[in-house]
Image 1: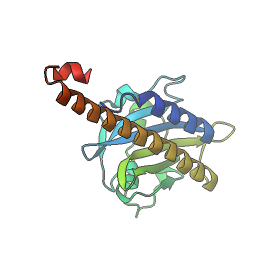
Image 2 (image 1 turned 180 degrees about the horizontal axis):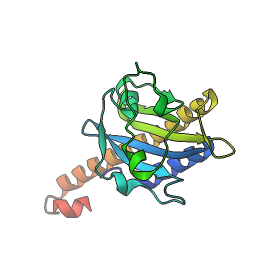
Image 3 (image 1 turned 90 degrees about the vertical axis):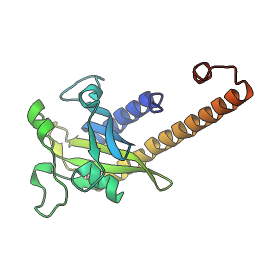
Image 4 (image 1 turned 30 degrees about the horizontal axis):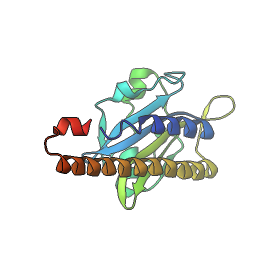
Length: 191
């Protein structure tokens, strides 16, 4: 997939963002076929070191609608900042899916979700979980961290945009190579 080359870049941006904001966990969702797929996920408590949670979620995806926190951020293209997902106001349109917490014993508290948009095109969502205070307890994302995270999300958008441009350029070059030498097999050209 075209995102494979971007993998290392996105994974390292996620690590940097988590470190800069003092967050325990985070996910980058990418839009694939009108859904949000878990592209990169990290959780320092459940998986210390750089072990990525990717494999847990390989086929997991969310609809882009108001039901979930990331879905709402994507659907309305707004930042959603929640101090405690287990204390959502009754009139909140979205619900927190606690199944992962239940299966892993993790406790998600504060969550922020920022849409990733390029020129009016929704590319995905950056979601960060559990900003930690100096004693390691989760606290809310304040205005300063929200601002920081929105700025860092632009790095992800830039990386995605460059990846898309590179991908389109490569496909165009392949098209030209195939036109010039029809004898070359399509597979050989693609490689």
